[in-house]
Image (cartoon, rainbow, N blue to C red; front, side):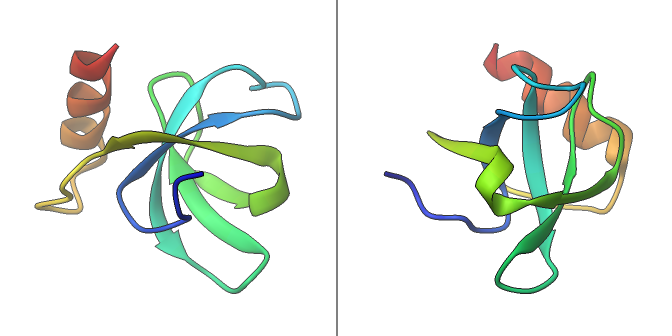
Length: 75
């Protein structure tokens, strides 16, 4: 299994955004991370509600739109 780390692409497994891909922006603590995705709002998320994938995005800036474009290009 891939590690929970900044830039890791994950799939949400719970909540109204279940099944959507997202990227980890920040690690808040051992249970929560900040995520954003094309169809996922920028919010904190419980790590138990994420399924990490093999893909990772290099976060060059804090521009959310740029991160969403990079995530879209992976799909």
